[in-house]
Figure 1 (tube, rainbow, N blue to C red):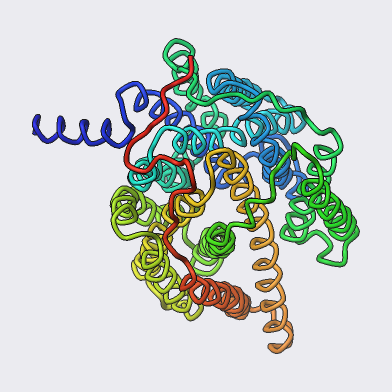
Figure 2 (figure 1 turned 120 degrees about the vertical axis):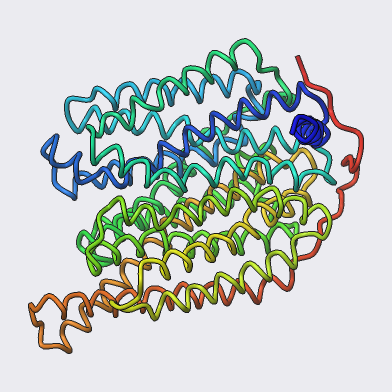
Length: 498
């Protein structure tokens, strides 16, 4: 056992180049884990929070929408921040924001303070993952990046897996405030460790901020995320002014933002990353996968609780085996990527996802809890086969100067895809349910309501299936990225900058 542990440790050191690099990345991974875990804890607890502080669902949804909004606005700016500030100062700032936000949320007497806490948490979370990815691509040569990103994937996939289950246990026996208190010690430990041990590993170029680009980015991405999130919440539907106005503002602002980025010398977000073909194809695939993942995460708990009568904890437990399998598979797919590339991993993964979504579209009241758990586990297996490999392959094609911009673009579009996917799927499910109810003469019988919900879910899952089939066809165009000119392959790692 001792020899095996030493061998695994030496493999990790070999992947990241040195013990110093490994330490830097492990500290950052722990910070990202805490942030992602906290993000997934709240969903199960919303009903308890509404009852405790006396708010309606339309108000409570801002705890989720506001969080997504801040991340959607902040991530496009991360490329500038990563180039402008040191790794150490940016990481400590992000964790500091997260820690302060968590403290405020834990003791919040009402909705306003709770929302403020969530906004500060989102500010920290939005910085952490792009920063971590950029550090990995700065330290690790191309031939070993699959293994490095696979190691990161263990933590990033495990957090969402245990989040709903852990939240269900805590909320069932304790106050929802324990959700925030429980992550504070870990966050504080990460801050202290980073303060004393974290070194700067990326060079700063001190770019100037373009104020107009920042404004257009905020209005553009913020408007799109808010508009689709509002539609997803179902308040007034797609024709509501709260959906149409922000979406219209967002689209116009994004068009102006795109023009601005392509015409100025130092763009806030360098959109020339889309001139790289593999990056372009990979980004589209990742957006489709995000929509598919959201369909299961959102629709399955609704079906289990509203149709089959399971508790929130039981609904959360359905997600657990799939999340654990993703964590186990992440380093394996990382090594497979290093050896074979992303193409066949993407093709097999998307085929598995498509088949599982098709099966989900035809679940009924008689479908057992175990079958749903197995199907969700297979879905997560498919996602684990392609998420990190496809992202790594996309960024591998870029020259080092564009790593921060490529990471910011992918992370931003994933957030937008999540908001768009949620809104589309909720709309399709709602319309499908209403259509069935109308055909049944709007009967109020419980069994009719359940059958109507199943009919709505079928429509939503079939849409997700169609999107994934499109992604499956696109995946045949994925090729293995070759090192850009001047990019180290097996050797030539950069030394930390002190």
